[in-house]
Amino acid sequence: MLIVGLVLAGIAALVHVYIFYLESFAWTDRKTLAVFGMTAEQAEAMRPMALNQGFYNLFLAVMTGIGITLTATGSTAVGAALVLAGAGSMVAAALVLVISDPTKRGAALKQGLVPLLGVVAVIVGLTV
Image (cartoon, rainbow, N blue to C red):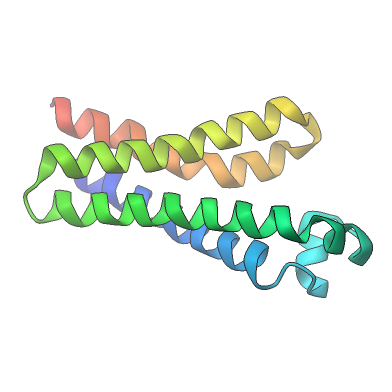
């Protein structure tokens, strides 16, 4: 079950790397505007915030990736702690998104379901 959790956490990390790309490099592209439901003017006004948020997503992905690597190479305690912190923060951010704007349920589900499943699987894998 631990391996399943690590795989799910890895998928979640890859999703967050993609979100980093959208928010930090492709923020004003036509496709990104459609994904986030914004006008070009709104995106331009939000560019500094999006860049910061993009890096936040990258840091969560990196933390999770380092945790996966450490767990897979035998440093289970430290690695699992990093995986749970990174993926758990992804889940928490998805909860904040849906609580702050219930119309963003779909985005919150895309952002938070896989890391949630990863967190549950890692915890089960560590306790069994």
